[in-house]
Image 1 (cartoon, one colour):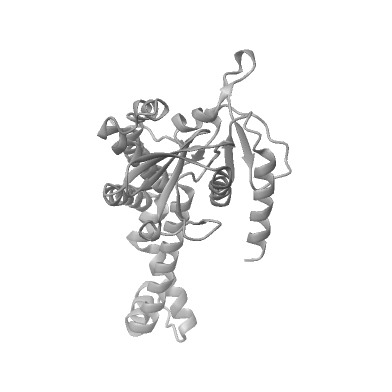
Image 2 (cartoon, one colour):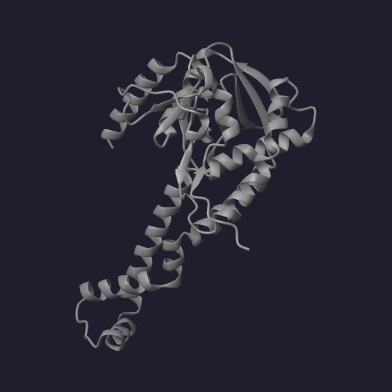
Length: 307
């Protein structure tokens, strides 16, 4: 019997968001503070972790397949995070492997990846349409006559017919249904996981202030420019960073090590989360990071309005 489709899918693992939560009043359960980077002036309201970091029908086709793949990583995370909190993440090599996979999982299972994938497909579709008109005009005319009974004279009508053929193609149908995305994201996860296996892990603690986490939480960064540049391809990055709690951040690195970072670097890493976010960042309700987030979100709005 086929497993049922899962509509509400968490892109930020619940186990991570819960690290940023505190007990709410009486029976309200744990709460985190979501911050809407699109509307920095809005009054932000506390929410339970389950209400945060999710997307509807992110993998729309055969979601149980993707969820099983993500679950194979997430099931092993609590013990690895417990080792991080205890200051012993490198005592067991399996913890390092799980934490590295956690970074890769959030790098790939992201709004950012879906956006890159969608743009790439649209670019290829336009390219194929142009090549059909340029390289096979006579074949297109014959096929148009066969399908529609019409003689297509100019390149404009040929282009419209080529677009129709591309839309009718099996590849486009698989794109529309979400089947292509599910296959693509699973393949990408396995590919990046294999590349990341050559890396080690840094576990960083802030000297002061706290980390926050965005809804695109695993971010590629280059640290040779200040402020850090972010969002480049995996192969061009110096590291992929992932906050795993207000007092812990994981970074892919050349060596396994634990270290602390000064407040200025904490601010830069938090700013990267805000700049990379799709819509929200999440923080511990007592982190006192709202003013910082508001300022950074406004800077993000100004920067985007100039593009």
